[in-house]
Length: 172
Image (tube, rainbow, N blue to C red):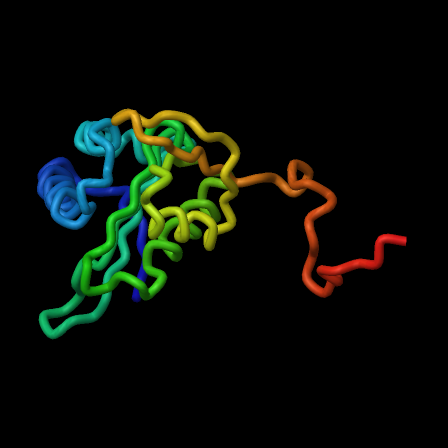
């Protein structure tokens, strides 16, 4: 698998590329991608990709006919405006979504996203990326939705166990 950033295309290439990515998200987003996220992606321009907090990544795999699109991740406003990940069903459960989201966090430095509480696969992806649930709210459809966010080291609670710590301690 190869993850690459989309950031520079001439206008003719951009429109074709963006429409292909939107089609992929609609077909493989399992009706879980918000309308707002799709609209933000649909209105994206190459110039906006240079703005802080905006990133468009694709995951490709080598297939019989060359490189094939396996996943897409788009973040705008560090995830506050839009954060979406879509993975082709043939490539799910191979940590492609986690790899895309991890790369977004690495590139942007911080990240937030909203995930419906009943979307267990997306929640697992966010937790595997290192995001933490910081708020419970109602989503755009009225469903309980978790706000997931990256925590800076200083923001992490000091009492969380670290690798090598005893999980059970004697309360003396």
